[in-house]
Length: 245
Image 1 (cartoon, rainbow, N blue to C red):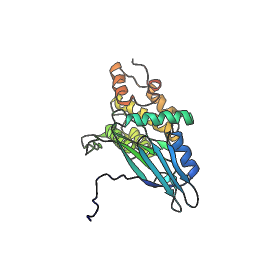
Image 2: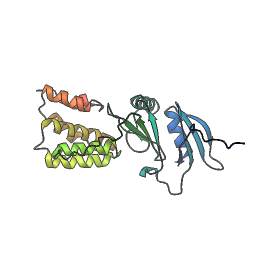
Image 3: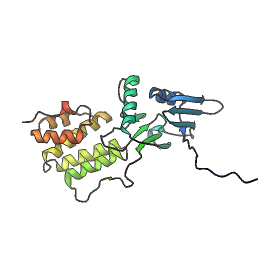
Image 4: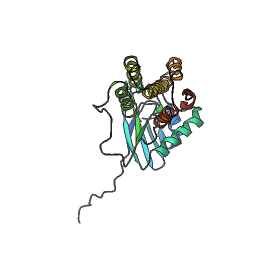
C-alpha cells in the first residue's frame, strides 16, 4: 500500500491570545463576526468567522497587557482592502455610535489608494488586512531628497500607516512645525496642521491652537485643491480649511 501524499490544500487558522472572552466576543460580534465555537472552561477557546476567513483564540499568557499591543497578529490577504475597512467602520458606527480610532480596540485610518489597514482587538492582537497585489517592495518613504517639514510629513506617514504609532507621529510633527514652519510652503504647513488636528482628535489632545493656525493661513483655490487631494480621507477636513482668498 502506497503512503498517502501531501497535497497542497492546507488551511491555516491563526490562534491568538484572548485576555477577556466577554470583551473579545462583544467587539468581534459588533463587527459582524459569527462565533462558531466558544468556551471559557476548562480553558478559553473561541472560534470566530467573518466572510471567508476564521480567527481562533486561546488562553492569554500570564501578565499579558493588551495596551502594549504585543499580543498576536494575523494577516488577511484580500483582493481589495477598501470594502473591508468600509464594512468595519460602518459596523462600529452602528454598534458604538462612532469609529474606534484610538486606544484598544480600534481600527487604523484608511487613506484612499492604501493597500493595508489594521484592526486592533481588545486583547491587543493586530489583524492586518493587506491587498494581494500590494507591491513586493512598498514605498515606505524616507527619501534623502526631502528636507524640513516635507521630511517630517513623510516620516509621520510612515509612523501612521506602517507602524500604527499615532503618538510618535504627533510628536514628530509638533517638533517639526516648531523648527520648520517659517520656511515651509503654505501647502505643507496646512497639511501638517491638518494632520496635527486629526492626530490630536485621535489622541485626545487639544486641537484649537492648530485649528486657529490653519484658519489663519492664506490659501489660494489651487492650494486648497492640493490639500484636498492629499487629505480628502480625513473626516472634518472641509470644516477645518479656510476659504480661499
